[in-house]
Each structure stands twice: as structure tokens, then as C-alpha cells.
Length: 361
Image (cartoon, rainbow, N blue to C red; front, side):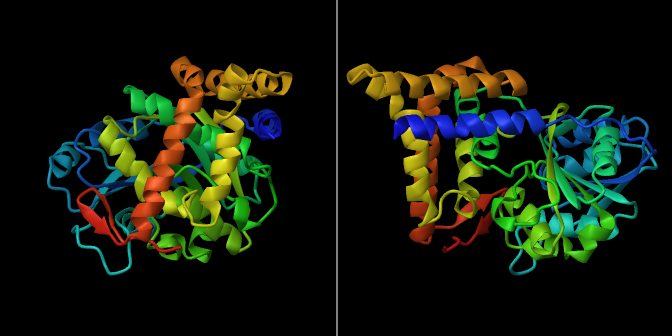
């Protein structure tokens, strides 16, 4: 069993990696609205906006929603003298039933005026050609309403390099249609909430972020909302287009990943199955090889190691995460079970000074 559970994601990832491409620059100069929600982002917002304004070969407007920041975010934005930048005051008060990011993005989406909408987190840094290449992806795939790319994840602390590379493992190793074109089944739709591009007409037709207003995990829920409205979604390689440092401490990483886990793996029905799949394919083979050596056990370890080496090389991940991969999967499962227990006990999630009721699945 362990060999089968280890070989399947390797086979899926090899196929997906062949199809996952970095987009080429746009053939026609695109008109793009870049939309950045910002709540207490003094450490990030200046550099994030500067990178966007340095974009080449695009017609551009940049909208930032200051969502009730109590730090220097508004002051930093006020120092940026560029007519392409417009700062919107969000007030910081959420309407009932909304999460902070989705409310900010909905406001930004309504204010945007150009044909392509790029939603980007404040901790993402775009390369000068990133917007043109993202627009090139949409031009090359006219059927797609929404697309997403995973920025290169900058990892400094042990918790970051142990856990964050597993984003690629889950997206590419366990979703046989992750990179499909023309399909609208929402069950397997996914993306990365750090970086989305959408056609404005499609975005407004499916209801925009209003359709996922309570979600804390737009990486899953926004692509699924598009597909529920009959609009295909896509995924591209953004490793050379953007970079992101999501968290700088283990506490922030744990809280950040836990808050949206119950919209992903950590459901009462799904998590026991995922525990068998991930534990059996990535954790069990090593003790089997050490304490009950056999050819299948060795082959399972080889499959897991090969998979992580492929991902590390393609996405510039730490080799330490490859060596300690079984430990990383154990930590991921512990995080998911912690999130499920917290949700089932009614304990709320907190993020950016806001409290969100526990989601009951």
C-alpha cells in the first residue's frame, strides 16, 4: 500500500510539471488593474507598490484598499507620487458575514476600470515583466476566466521551509486536472490566493468576491466559484514572475495556515482520508525501510524523495525540506488536525486583529 500511495503523486506531478508553464509576454499591450488589499502592511506595502509601478509593457492602474490600518501603511502610501496609484479607505469595519480580505477585494473589484484584474497580496513582489506575462497567459487561453500562479516562496525560518513547500506537493501531486483547460468541475479547482488574474467581465458575471464573502481560503473558493458559473480556471508557473515571504515566525505561520485549513483538507470526512494518503505515502515508507526493510519500502522512499527533489529543483525550494520531508508531512497533518479540533470545539480563528467564527463542516 505504501508504495502505491508514494508512486501515485509522483506520477501525477511528473505529468503536471510537464504542462505547467511560465507564460510568455502579451502579444497585445494589455490594460490591467492591479488590486492590493492592505491591513497593517507597513513592512510590505511600499515595496509591493513600487514593484507593480515598475511593470513594463502594460497600461496600468494600481488600487490599494487601506483596510483600517493602525500602523504606518497610510503614511507610506501617501508618499508615493504616481498618478497610476489610487488609495481607497476601507474604514476597517466589516459588514456581517464577510472576511476581511474578501470584503477588501470586493471593494477593489468594484472600483477597477480596466479589462484584466490582478489581485495580489501585499507581501508579493512582482517582477517587471510579470504583469505582461500574466496577461499573455490570458491571451493564449481565451476560454479561461480566472488564473493563478504560485509565487516563489521565500523561506527563512525552519517552520517556513519545512511546511510551505508542501503547497506545491498538494497542488501538483494530488490533483489530476490541476492544469486542465476547458473544464468547469469545481471539485478539483484550486489556485494560490497570493496572485490571481481575472477577466473583468467574467469576474463581475460570477459575482466577484461577493460569491465567497465569508471565506478565509480564496485560493480554493474563488476558482471553485468561477467554475460553478461555468467558467474554466487555470494555473501557471509564477516562480520567475513573483516572490512572497508569507510569514516570518512559526507562530504566524501556524495561525495563518490553521485559519483556512477547514476549507481545505481539515474536514471531518476528508481529513481521515488525507491522513491515510499523506501519512501512508510520505511518512510510513521511511520507518518501514528502517525497521522492516523490503524492496517495496525502499521503492516507496525513492518515489517520495524523487518527487520532492523534482519540486525543489523546479520551484527553488530548500533542500533541507527534501531531507526532512516526512517530518514536514507529519507537521502538516498535525496542523490540519489541530484546525479541525479547534473548529469542532467552536473556537474562532483570528487574523490581523479580527476574530472569525469557527466554520462547522
